[in-house]
Image 1 (cartoon, rainbow, N blue to C red):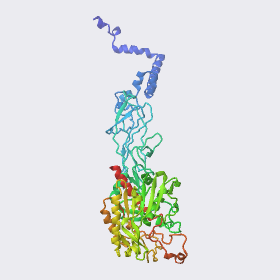
Image 2 (image 1 turned 90 degrees about the vertical axis):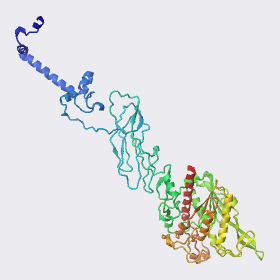
Image 3 (image 1 turned 180 degrees about the horizontal axis):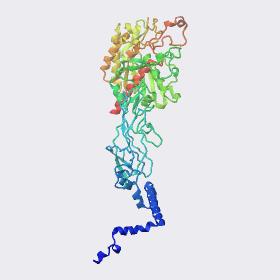
Length: 615
């Protein structure tokens, strides 16, 4: 009872009367002013702390936790409290979003895959590549290149992925935006963490020929387009040829594997001549080694279009002859031409192409110091820096020219169909040998075949030229099978090169000086020669593999490519009287058609090298 009376109202009054008596104290003006002032100051101070929460850190951590927008229970705690710029205790009274929230995109889900990233480095969000519809006729894939050497520094790890980035052109560089955000509580800076990243597809080293767009091999740092302090994920096109690429004669380049696939089943010899201003392969007048007989530029031929034609097979594109690369392939080797003056034409062409690819041309010279390449049985050009020689052996029939006494005791010329040429012992060990024969089988003596062809001691009174040709190439084939080591030497046979005499032959006023355009319609070409049919049959019966360079049709198109009247500078008195009577419509101007033969030779050597690399 005593405890109950302890809390009874004073003087027996009630609770209302007690409160009124308490507020009676405030009835004086001074006391009332002090109360209002205190309330006003409290409200101002509270508002100041509410709208400037960063200031609370200078007073007390507890105040910071009250007025800061970050809290462990808010909706944005996972994002570091970045959801609202207002204090949490105010948002408590406005729970339905009456305070505007910031528009922050929710990042897409992290793709699968693992990439180990150290958190001791600046970590940038990985962009996802969104490929637009591919350009017509072009293959291109994007590459996600991991940053191999990020800048140092302790930066917290952001495992989020930035929104997709669109590529808008084949040469546009896609870059990573450098940004980082705070991590939630508990993240340690000195640790390695695995962030899922979608594995990037490999770059396809592919190019549609002539398109000018190509991708380069993975891992080639020099091929990347770089911006300062920004990594690039797109490999830009390069003008320089990359490893694993081949340059085509049309000016484009393509992947090595694709190139070999395109040429593997291609018929090099079925095609057409197309204009190409990037030709010839060497500047006219730049090679002093060309015989006067072939030097149409020096001899004053005025038209130039015959130099700017490129041979284009129907099923593929030949590689443009790269003299430097060919020299690298042939280091320490011997390449030999054996045959008639048309093979000398091809030999001089190759010497000029390779010589113009050498920095110090004084280190390219003829072994015996010769400057004129007619009248001798053999010539050899030495490329000193490459320990490499390009040689020519004169053997117009491939079999041996002979002499026997006639009835009057005088010597008579014959052709031994059963013996190869004398020089064969000099080139049988060469690494690459290119044979030819043909034109000399059209001369009067060989065509008539009377008292000319010989086997053993027997001289045929008369023998058909086709049968004589068959016997001769069979003798040559047997010698090759017996003396050429196919494990060391590569053997080629270049086919017949067409002549274009009109109104006669080489010794009877035949002409071609009016021809300045090639034949463009196959129906105007001559039928395939019976001699070449015989040759093909013999080649098929050989044990040794011989590659047949069948240049007959491609040469037949080029009635415009001969020296004609531009075969020499100084004419004899007889030639001056009738200059049009003496024309050369058999050989070829240089630069000219034989350069294309050498491009075919180059393509064949590249194919062989590729096959050896695969085995």
